[in-house]
Length: 245
Image (cartoon, rainbow, N blue to C red; front, side, top):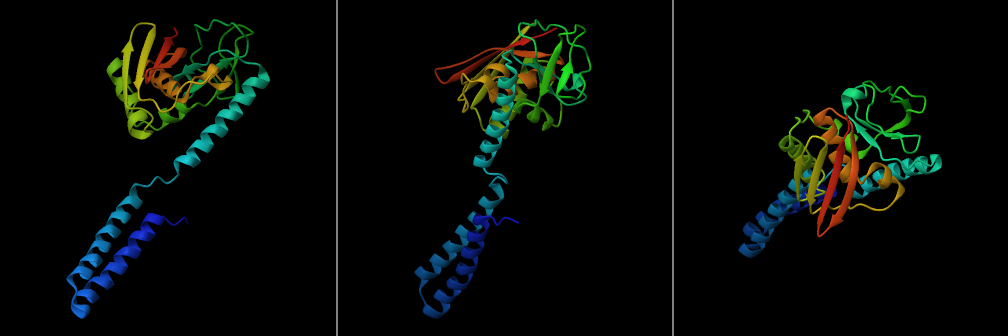
């Protein structure tokens, strides 16, 4: 079991203060030294409280795991030569688990996807022989599984869910604004900590923030979603999502 350093420090300060304060006041007769002992006890309680807020997994470890998954997926996409944009599916179309589909054939215009996609890596999403894709897990997919309730199909509910994930759970942004139309979802994110990069993984699946916005929108609307455009300027990220029929 890993020992929390804040808790060890807090217990040590509380123990030292408990011994030092009465010793200084009753034996040495120094109020100033007794006050130092009391201060040590207060600081010790503060350290113990901080121990309860320290994450079980450090941010550095989370970053390593995220980069490992992204690099493995990027290596797979590069080996297969896939450059198509991924289509995010709601959990109702993927056996209760949201995933993203990346078509194997270039230039396929995915508009109609059959209702139930099998739970495999390589899947068939349509009726034509070339309607094949790989189904991958994304940062957005993982965060959807963490939600207690499914968001509703309104701009306000999508905005509230994306805000909860990005600002509350992950602390990756300051604020989120969502505008919804019939075939498009526009997501404006202020103070985003992760920006779009022109790398293979992002070109297919979008940045982690765009992935979360696409997965939430797909789950809320119950329809496939594709990241149409993503850009960053003047401290804001703008993500344009296309709603597929």
